[in-house]
Amino acid sequence: LLLSRNNQIFEFNADKMPVGVAFKEEEPFTNHSIRVQDNDIFYLFSDGYKNQFGGPEQQNFSRKGFTTCLAR
Image (cartoon, rainbow, N blue to C red; front, top):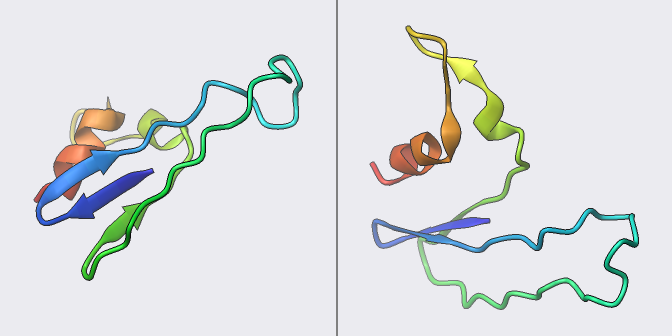
């Protein structure tokens, strides 16, 4: 989850646990509470976005590429 607020990007990291598989059954998922402000923009996505290829050199988009686009 990324939050764009006042030209800044805030990242809320996911837990490193698969959903639906009980490898770490005793560990709960992390709950995040965010106070929403006017003009906040939230971006929720899967890990597949950074594996997209494109552009003139057919490069990986990457997390840095994504957050750089949001900061503009």
